[in-house]
Amino acid sequence: MRDFNYFSSYIKVQNKPSSKMILLVVLSALILALIGYYQFSLIMKTNALKDEIAEVDAFLTSSETLSKVNEVNEKQMVEGALQLAYSDLMNVAMLMEVSSQVDEMLIEKINAQVPVGLFIDDLNITEAFMTVKGYALEYSTIAQFAHNLRNAGGLSQVLIPTITEDSGNYYYTITSMVDKEGFYEN
Image (cartoon, rainbow, N blue to C red; front, side):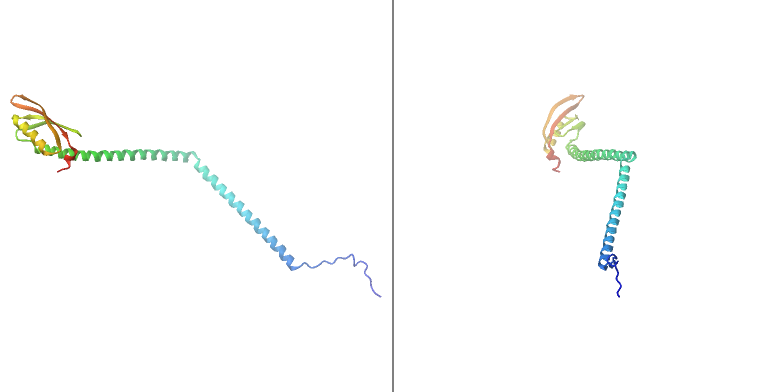
């Protein structure tokens, strides 16, 4: 006789899970864990960067930092003004040096033309004009001096507007135009 199991239709036998399915579930869980970890690390890095930015902003906007920045800006403005003044001063010094050399050359040229018995009391040289005042022991010495100045170069329109006699001396004034090109000839 045979045994009949009337409950067999009601008993479910669990099938063994396939290894592919287990591997797929494990890989899915691992990938989800890696994605979660990556997201967590990105959030942590973002928060750390936000904290650093907040710290730098706090430092930059602090009153102490702003006052130092203002001091530096003021000192840079002063430095710029001083640099400009220095360059202007150097230009003026260079112009004075060139002018001084030109005046010295002209004065040496004038002194070389002074005849014996003539004396210079006042010499006034500007960029365009020269005036010489003085006295001479003889009348003809003044004319000789004017002639020498005309022939020396560097001066044009040499004129003797006044000659007066007082106590045996002849007081004179000689005017002339200064030629810029004449300075550099010698």
